[in-house]
Amino acid sequence: MRFDARRLALTCIAAATLCAATSAIAGTLAVNVSARGSQRATWQNLFDQFKKANPDVDLKVTYVGEEAYKVQISGWLATDPPDVLSWHNGERMAYFAKRGLLQDLSSDWQKNGWDQTYASVKQSSTWAGKQYSVPLGTDAYGFFYRKDLFEKAGISGEPATWAQFLDDCKKLKASGVAPIAVAARDSWTLAAWFDYLDLRINGYAFHQKLMAGDVPYTDARIRKVYETWKTLIDDKYFIDNALSYDVDSVGPLLVNGKAATMLMGTFFSAVLPEATRGEMGYFRFPIIDASVPVAEDGPVNVLVVPAKAKNKVDARRLLAFMGQPEINGELAKGWGQLPSNNKAPEPQDPIAKVGFQTLSGTTGGIAQFYDRDMTKEMADEGMKAMQRFFSDPTQLDAILQRLEQTRKRIYKK
Image 1: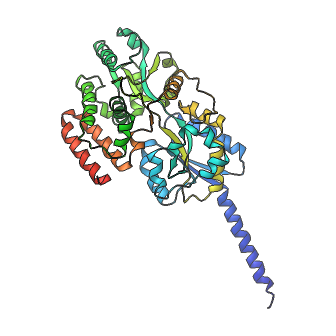
Image 2: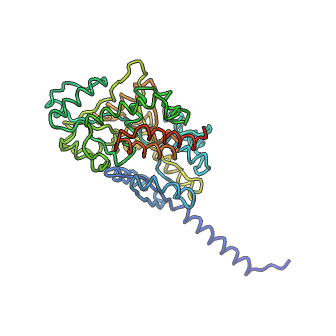
Image 3: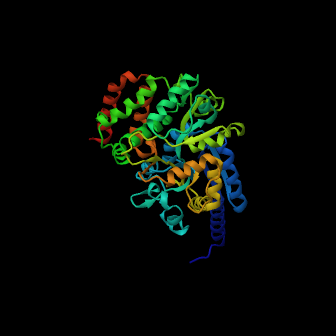
């Protein structure tokens, strides 16, 4: 066989060019994250730390608003995704995992010792026995409230029962303050109300059956949840024009003393002005039925790697970095959340502390949140129905009938 030096040289050049191109791709790490307000600064601080520790990685971060992010993530995963995405645990994560759109990270969990450090949130990171996400921070949910407005209305202490809460709302309204702020334009804030009323009235086991599509929406127990909610609407305890407010625009009502309470995740504490913090308190959603074991919402935010990611090697480096206890704690602190890593420092923020104590002492179950525990299509329809109900509670029967038809169609039950 004749030796062709020219062909060999060309082959070597082509191989070298391919290796260089592959190396360049491998050195670029594309990350998309959902961020609002001060969350972006917290993200960026940690990304800067990662770049300092990994100077060979060309990190490209894209920040997207929360609501737009929810709409776009399906398209990213199905077509040409970045290498890492921020997302949510529970059904939100499982929805994409069962469709083969997420990378199995079980080996990373074993390698990095996450089976131990993330033991409390491993279940919500798992689908079909495999882990597909790395937990970041956990939100506790409860009522932010203005202590000075409570005092002005003649309220001493925080309400522990529903009867006490209703009495406090009556006093607050009489004092000229809207008892409850809610950002109903963001339908998930209404979902928090539904979750807690259902958890307090019917309990965690029933709530999970509903999330799985196993309970008719015409069930009397579901109607009781909405009727309890309707009492607050009928008595005008919520702010006026609530459907025109989103989370970003409703905050000033609480800060400026126009509203006295708001059911929200602990992340909200991160955006509170320093001057307001001294007047702000936080309490657990009141008990409605003392015979029902107390359950809470504790949604977990995570990072995932798309199955079609181009740079999974560096993606795993980023996940390992973010999974370190001190980094996890720093991220949670900046977000006003609770660290998911059990080796991370406990939160020192007064509100985060209450949230931490609330979740750590919960024995009745911890839900991921309405639109994270339920299949996406049903959750979307359910939250639209909540907005319709909030706009006109007299349409409850028609709303429940329509939801039941939707449940039968989606779950084929």
